Amino acid sequence: MKEIKVITLLCGFLAALAVNSSNAASVVIVANGASTGPIFVTSGGGNIDLGTRLRVGTFLDATILNNTISDYLSGSQSYANTLLALNNNFADLGTNVTNYGNASQTGTGISSSQFVFNTTATLTINGTSGTRNVANGQIQNVNYTSSIGTSKNVYLWTALNNEIGIVRGSSWTTPTSDLTGLTLNLSAITASSGVLLGNYTDYASGNDTIGLVAAVPEPSTGALMMIGAVGLVAMRRLRKV
Image 1 (cartoon, rainbow, N blue to C red):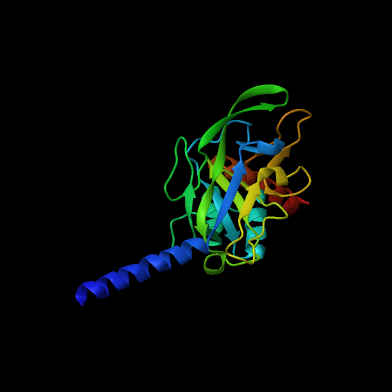
Image 2: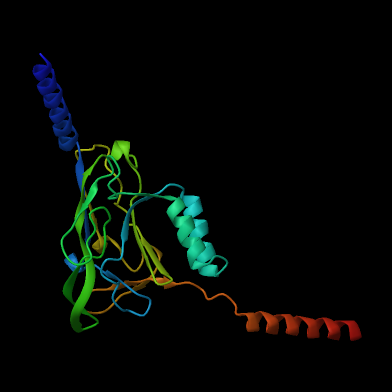
């Protein structure tokens, strides 16, 4: 009798796994220049390091996101504080959390739980052919309803060496059904739309680029002392008038 109960429980467990698997979708990320789409590059146009994480998911509060970007661009928030704010406001796909799915990639610097820049592609940018570090793959077994939700905006963003880039295609929205797949192709990003934080360069030939934005340097001690000295001189002049 005990053996029968164990077998019954095991069959039930396997059946549950089969149901969950059949009710999950795959999110495909195409950030390798396919369909003449742009690719992520550093602010100076260089390669993003292989193994750098490419975040996939949704920002929980759009107002907080907009304020975070604004503060970063103005220099009122540092790179570290901006990353903290972005992380606290973001729900990831592909982190091996239950129902959030897992990243499926092959190549250099791959991770079993996080989506990363994982491979290279030979692309022509501004008329010059070269090897570029890019990202391509999918996040499998995603249940939208129990992870980030349905009808949610989906974003791609990355950060490297004091630089950040954030994009979202207008059609990047989680489907209302867990059975429906979703493709996030950077070809949906153009010079006029989709770049929330980044510098889009539209080249006449080949692929375009989305450059990360470097943090505004904080004033040095010397610069702050100089500003203070100028202020004191101005105040003295006002007193003499």
